[in-house]
Length: 64
Length: 283
Image 1 (cartoon, rainbow over the protein chains, first blue to last red):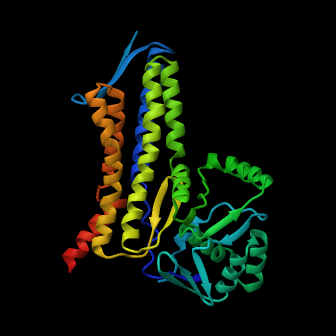
Image 2: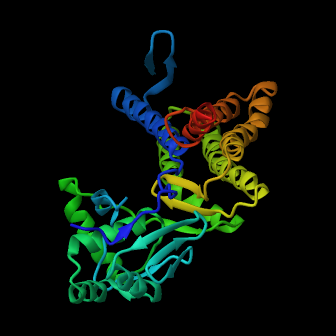
Image 3: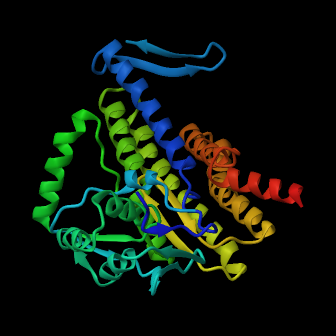
């Protein structure tokens, strides 16, 4: 199938930024996942605290 | 180089009643399609020029398909052309309310199969207003999800109401504003070099379209964006540290790190810096 358009070599339509927004979305999804996990594990209004233990690379959820 | 058939995958969902037209950034000169801000001239193979000519004045998709059939253009050729135009930000679509309801029904029916139609790209000549609109279009999923997560966290007692309100009232607006300032910084560097720019948005992708610049301008442009975004976060980090308001410090730091991630050489600004560096080594 022959194309109807021959692209000019100087055209670069791929250079659009997505990094910062994707990283932010991933971050918010991560927080959402932690929140959902806390609600599932401790029940509604059952979570006392929640945090990330970077040295042991795990999320710690403390229930009431 | 001819258009690769992969452009077919960029053609958005189109209904017969949708009115399609060409973006003002694209000018048709006989058998050439000129993308003015990019400085690119794409060659059209007849009867592709007739199709583009029809798009220039606005035509319904149904009529465009009929015209293509009369001209002997196959459906894959037409879809590929429209896909390319969408990828380049050159396709505009106007749809009635009834059309939107039909489109939503089609999307809902096909979503369980994993078939997701590409979104229509949005491209306009860059101004403060168009950049703000494009930034909101690109960041609304993050904002919406952030509000939802914060609300659930407040209501379920995981975080205090004050912390949640800081997250919604400070972090999210700071994020959106930093993205806006990031793109604005790119624009200022390009304007300083007398380069015209368009702003383009496609789903989460947001960017400034421009013709190829010198290595120095590309480098300064690529560094300016993340630097401006990080710079906007510094006062918040300083305030959070000095006044011991952890949530403000954490939100500012997180958003600064998000902008810093843009400097990774894999994509976006980082890739631009890497290309500029490689070009200088080649010289």
